[in-house]
Length: 314
Image (cartoon, rainbow, N blue to C red):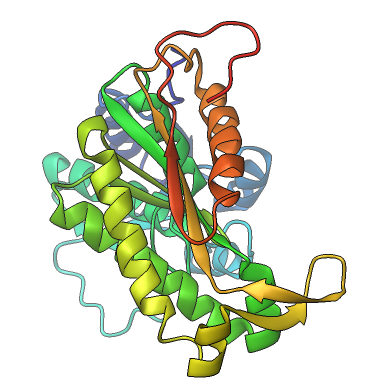
């Protein structure tokens, strides 16, 4: 497997001896470190090769540092980059308004503490960027990594989506639609946690992924369906529930009988011979979800193939 590139750190310091020591210690931990001695060159260096994290040495003369940091923070592309400041031990900081930092350390540098702060800063920004803002569940980067790591193991990747969600969202409004998505996220998270743990992710919209041991997959999916169907009953009035549908525009823009919300789940065992590479997971899941959506109401379909041949279908 290809190795992930090491995080790139931009180290801004006018103290050459201190910068060299910091660079060597950071490189010993596998970081790529670029030392920037002149502030006027910093922004140009950032724009040509954006760093993953910036360390600014305020214990040495740093004319223009605050202005440079303000410029970085005002740029929508560069503003999320974590910035750690280094200050003299005796420095008193009454306000951080002029220092748009994410963290700081004081001299003498405790390298163990510095490494920990760097790791936490990089982890935090990955989590913030990846997590879905509506549900706070891990997003596509984490989902893909989790699927890759599941290859060949006795685990099941379960793709979940809501049937007839768009007409509901259009008719009842985005706030109601968002609440349904948050509700499903809570159901999935709670069910996975309460049944022994696993991974939960939000692809986007009304699409979710959960990964659990294969032997628990059907139990987990059945429980998710039960809880979702129970709560869906609270979303509609009695007349609508009795009919089993409501009038709304379908995907063709025509008024139609729209069934009540339900979910379809595709269960893909990761130790199946049908799964020869990570991209195949989504392909098999798409096939299974088509089958699940043919059923009335919520359902799951699991790939039970024990061998693969040309033209095989779940």
